[in-house]
View 1: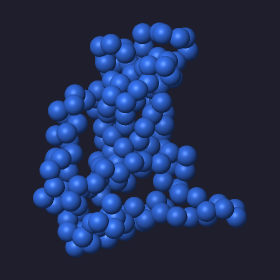
View 2: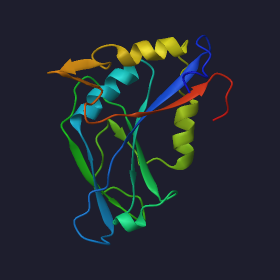
View 3: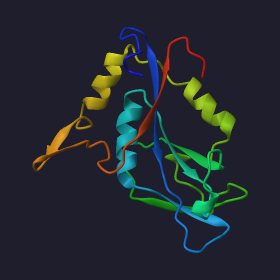
View 4: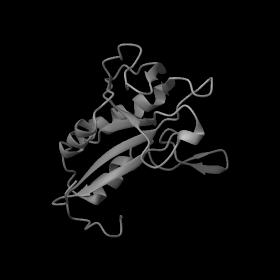
Length: 170
């Protein structure tokens, strides 16, 4: 995609972290979702730079239920400077309801239309180069750990970025 982007054309970015459902028994009627504290830290940095962050988790209790198009639960992360500790909660697989009231910095589960609306409201960055600079700044770019090169953006947690160029339909 980056080769196709006009470097001078405004773009929108949305960061998405995949979460895996935690299941203790086959075919149970709920999944457990964990959002690690480091995701809040990165979501805050991205939010401050005009890039919203979402997390998604498939609502399945077995790997056999996982398929393209399986139901998913979607959440936005909207943290302030006070990063939370890990947050863990249950989601009913059928109703998509959470077992707790989520903290204010987690919104969801989102309906499909809310998810699309979120992306449509993202402000445009001035250029592809601006996006690259944001993603490389403040320790979110390449760094070194010992003799290896790693991507510190969550180290083990790497987002997928959804990109829309100015004028493209969502």
